[in-house]
Image (tube, rainbow, N blue to C red; front, side, top):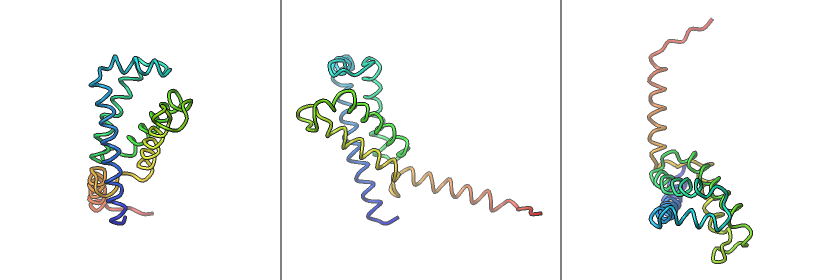
Length: 149
């Protein structure tokens, strides 16, 4: 992995993570009841369940992306949440966010999907844990003796 790839993934994770944390925090700080009402007005099904779930995914998922922990799984979950937001709330309004369109959820979802595909990069907790796992695997296999027939 090149240094530019590692730094690019780090920057993407941090920026996307901050955006997600801000949106999740906004949903909780405005009062989850107000978020439920907003979801209902946009036609989101099961708004009473969706609002706290989405707020939690955004807040916790954003923190995990910043840390680079569970990046591939978080990326898939965030991408699916943004797909749902596009389908249930934003597509009928066109592309532009100022009109309630899908451009923001599209950009967030695509960024999350990209991180799901590429992973967190070398500058992440995922990479540290991966190195530890690999080191443990090598330690265990180095001490064993292979028997061949």
